[in-house]
Image (cartoon, rainbow, N blue to C red; front, side, top):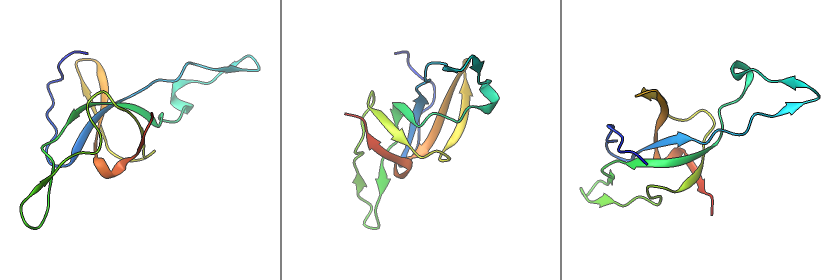
Length: 98
């Protein structure tokens, strides 16, 4: 895994969506524009952590390299060096794939 030039801030997490294999159903190939964004992603980088009212930082429940399920419409898409990433809050991560 190469070093990414984006460092998320706060409770944000940088993920890269895991592309599903292109499926052909009944001889019809679904174009990229009609496909939904995949919900499975890999955690690439973590922010600095969420700060509570007392000023203490809380740690992340995910770690770099985890495969996770993410909210379908959560986050902001970011393109860097030809790759597409999503920057999202940890709350938009639904679970860790174990």
